[in-house]
Amino acid sequence: MQLSSLLQRFSEPETLKMAKLGRELRAKGIDVIDLSLGEPDFDTPQHIKDAAIKAINDNWSHYTPVAGFLDLREAVCTKLKRDNNLDYKPENIITSTGAKQSLANVILALAEEGDEVIIPTPYWVTYSELVKIARAKVVEIRTSVENGFKATPAEVEAAITPNTKVFMFSSPCNPSGAVYSKEELEGLANVFRKYPQVTILADEIYEYINFVGKHESIAQFEDLKDRVVIVNGLSKGFAMTGWRLGYIAANVEIAKACEKLQGQFTSATCSITQKAAVVALTGDLKPSQEMTEEFTRRRTKTLELVNGIPGFKCFEPQGAFYVFPDVSYYYGKSDGDNVITGAAEFSMYLLNTAHVSSVMGDAFGEPNCVRFSFANSMTNIEKAWARIKEALAKLQ
Image (cartoon, rainbow, N blue to C red; front, side, top):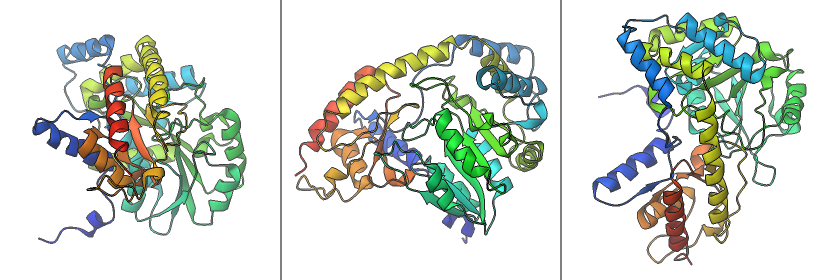
């Protein structure tokens, strides 16, 4: 059978691949601690589940508009005004089956062969692959632990060419945990003002999981707002990963383009999820705040444990729920049977020896780093890092 050449242009997400390998080991009876997947280990708050149950009982079980119910799009506008002081109308909002689909919609609506998409490293694994699917070119800006994993205005300007179509980034960042301040965003905004052909794609899915203060959106700069596409969703901040609801806020032209694409791919997301999302977005944020408080405690413990590992260089995450240490100190070392030649071998060594899953940094554009999640219980975090330390001590 001859499959489409499209499948050769992009890779399977390493996050999903590592989770799959972990499940296979568990099926053999091995106790694997999962520090690979980006999923809160909390249940969806009760008031949101109650809204879904009510929606089922009220028979909200039919097809919905592709862009989402009007009351949901109004709820997104309410949230953006309440949390970000941003004014949008329902016509600017398109909801989808998760932020991943929202990102895909935007990239496919904007980029094509011959275009360039600038992405600072490290970036979420799907960013580069979506650009490849669109036949556009990925232009990486290599950041580092030393500069806080953030792109500077000078680096961004140096990467822009006449073919640049999109600048794509996340804050808080998956996997580094970097958070751009208002001043840092203003520095980037000053660059983008010189290049009106560039659309700014801002992934804000980790907005509520912020350890350094108020979330800042690059859409706050009014003269740039029409060129900014905000991507957000309910998975991280509301512990609703399986509900599948993401959304964009964009100018009407981009919103309509995404609606057209989505109309052929999936139509709208689940009607019950949409009704629950209205309550999530406009209701009590205390459960989300309590989750962030717990993530803060886990971050403190994780950093304490990570800093006890010889050779690790670790940036202190300002948001999200990951640490992303530079582990290159171990490259070239061996336990007699396994040689660590890079991040992939490092992650596989930990999976097979320590029975702890992680994600190699190559997938995020940073081959010297490995991502570890702290979206797990404190008990599992402590147990996992004890295993990691013991396994790494065997490498010479």
